[in-house]
Image (cartoon, rainbow, N blue to C red):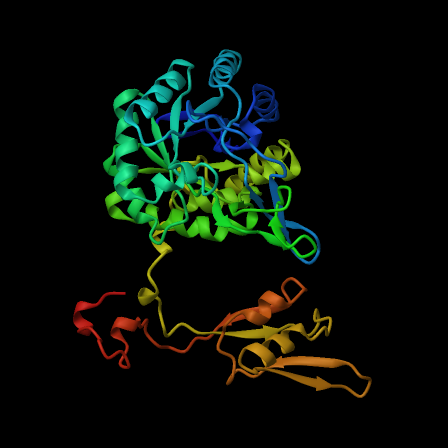
Length: 429
């Protein structure tokens, strides 16, 4: 049986699944329900001392696909609006009642050293096993000089991280904003400030939709709306990329990662761990489906590990990292062609339409006397883009087959058509 125990920045956890700092971790009753369901830990909803937090209604807007499935949630909710003393008391109680579970305290403050240190010390005294610095919220608090207003400035990321490191003897997780050009900039700043780990990504600045009757963004408050933080399965690709960028940077090799962003299934979590994350945090999926989803995550991850022969998470952590490369390192002589299995084809024609209208006109139609249609691929025109495979509604109907062309690996720096081609003897693939 796979062992899901893990250690994140020195914090031991019974499994890698934590709830992220968000509405699901705002109260003792919520976190206690989560622990009963099997979550390994929770990052308490962000607290502060000043200024006072006043929330509005409505708070959530959603982005759906054409089937009505929610892909992402946009919110304008602020950090915890409950008194700090209440939050601290409930954290203390849960630490006593659930000693085998992890509670990380999340804090935010104005750009003042004493404010950051004060809240950090109070959280530490409440018994949290680590401190997460919320430098990512893109709405509400950033207008007051907090959240992403700090997280977007490397100097301030380093400074606030160092303040908290000086104040408490606990693992410090610096939570990064994705609303930035290069995620390595704040990651390096957090590392310089002494962070044990980074948590990412926080929500993405967005307007999720517009109410065309009221002519205002959703969620609408009275007659107006505002930008907010976007999260959910739709942001997973962005999170994966940013996690990979940090994980494969040699200068940050000792900076651990608590991954966040669209994690809904066990395989989502496994992908982040394979890129180098030590553990994961979940929010939107729990809000949409309830805390019991962790059952499927734990069971699925365990089964995957058993099938692959991985006894612990460390056996596959970071295993995909070496295969994440810059575009220039890709083999330009590698070739694949689409092949359509006519036996399983339902003749919907989606592959043909996609290829004909928007790709390379490589799929041909043969019409039988009985009106049936047979779709085939013209290898001479197929560039192996995979579009037909992605739009096909039948699993396994379209296969991308490797072409054995006998050519050696060739990267762009070595390519004869590259005007800046390097000396082939100095380039390795």
